Image 1: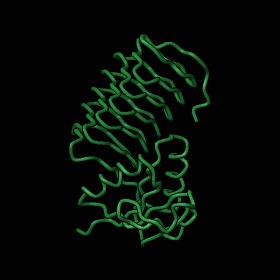
Image 2 (image 1 turned 90 degrees about the horizontal axis):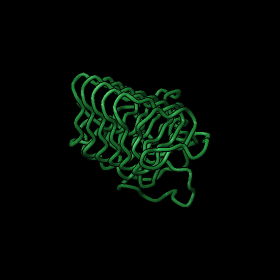
Image 3 (image 1 turned 30 degrees about the horizontal axis):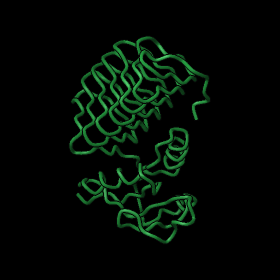
Image 4 (image 1 turned 90 degrees about the vertical axis):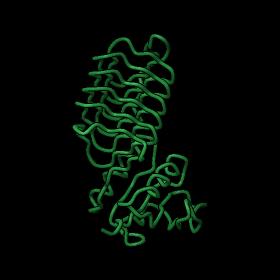
Length: 215
């Protein structure tokens, strides 16, 4: 079966990692890149032409049938994801060959799992979730739509992460805790108690330092 022609949204660092995973895939072929930075238009990214802004998505650049959103920021990634889905694009999972996802894990459209990511049995992943490099999700977790685990983040068993939430680089969450929607756990934090919606928590143990709009 021929690889599906795919457009990548974004021409930054996060997108660069995804472009490399697409290159390793036998199911997807990167045929076009879109980015709203006009200084990049007409150039190349990962060896592929940057056609122009995301306004061109409707015109199916490169005759793309699938779309991968290479944006790390949750709210922006969600917006482009919804737009591509409304336009009828496939939003396939992009999973590095070294990622380990247990056979019973439930995941949805738009999953991005980087090198070394691990997801253990009984876990459910929402739409458009990012599992960055060497992140670890243990058994029976639930990760909400558009959430992002940064490199090295660790979720113990039975953790619930709300939609649009960030778990920072090398942060760790103890078992059976709940991290609310649109919150941020800072880099290196150790979470020992539930975290509510819409806050930033940092430190060891993690403490709430301010409210946050989840952008």
